[in-house]
Every structure is written in C-alpha cells, then in structure tokens.
Length: 166
Ligand SMILES: Cc1cc2nc3c(=O)[nH]c(=O)nc-3n(C[C@H](O)[C@H](O)[C@H](O)COP(=O)(O)O)c2cc1C
Image (cartoon, rainbow, N blue to C red; front, side, top):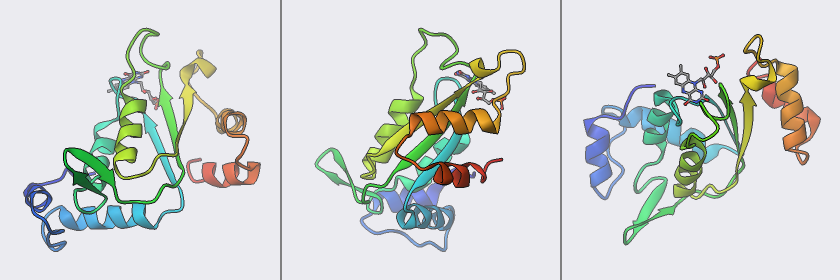
C-alpha cells in the first residue's frame, strides 16, 4: 500500500477534492469509493508494536480524507459517511506482548472509523494462545470464535466472510 504524497497533502489543505489524475489522489479516490459503496467492511490485520501495521495505517491515510469522508466543525472532526458494520479480525502473539502492555490498535481503529461517521466496529481477537505449541490459528478455530462472539451473524454469513481468507 503506497503512502499518501504531496498532491494528497495539497488537496487536503484546499477546499476542493483535488485532481484524481495526479499522484496518490487516484488511489485515494478508488479506496474511498470502496468504503463509500460498502455495506460492511472487513479488516483482517495483525497487531504490530501495539498498533496497526504500516500498510493498514497507509490505507487509513488514504480514506480518512478531509472534505471527502470527514469535515471539520471548528476543531472537531465530523464524519460524512453513514454508519455500517465493521468487523476487525485481529491476530496477535498474545492480546498484546504482555498483559500490562497498552493496546493502541483497538481505540485507534475505533477513533478513525468514527472520524468518518462509522461507529459500529467489532473486534474478533485471534490469539496464538489458542495453539501455543504451533503458533497457528486454524480456520475452524477462527470460525468458532466468530460464531461465539457474534451470535447475531448467521453461520452462513461467517462462512462466506471467512472463505475469502482461507
Ligand atoms: C513487527 C512486528 C510487531 C509485532 N508487535 C506485536 C505486538 O505489539 N503485540 C502482539 O501481541 N503481537 C505482535 N506481533 C506478533 C504479530 O501480531 C503476529 O505475528 C501476527 O498476529 C501474525 O501471526 P503470524 O506471525 O503467525 O502470521 C508483532 C509481529 C511483528 C512482525
């Protein structure tokens, strides 16, 4: 996932949307369109150093865009998108490295989706503690975690969602 560039930064400072023909704005337009048109969003991510990996951070930089997915009311960010469910499947070696380590990932993702107006964010943690000998999480383990954590989602829907990853 490439980072945002100078054209993106210039467009962010102006009132308009900028020209999608230049620099990273073209990619940003495509990624924003995917979010805008979505009924639901699935984020599958590892935890890296207590937060999101840099590729996911780059995606956030592209889609959390002033005058496009949020605007300002005074100093406050106001989301321009309608709410929709976001399912975050989170893998980590533990919940964090150690029990007393802070978790910046969950509050950060909640805050960034909320900035766009998306408030329904649910997390599904896949911890290596499931299989300490192998360090693996199987698809069946993941399905049962999802089914237990999200009783409102039908088994068929979970299976359809999960088959995209395995
Ligand atoms: C650069 C890096 C930083 C990581 N930071 C954390 C961390 O802060 N907390 C944690 O629980 N796991 C951390 N991990 C472990 C990953 O979350 C774990 O490897 C990931 O969930 C995927 O599992 P896999 O390595 O089997 O693919 C880190 C891994 C890497 C490579």
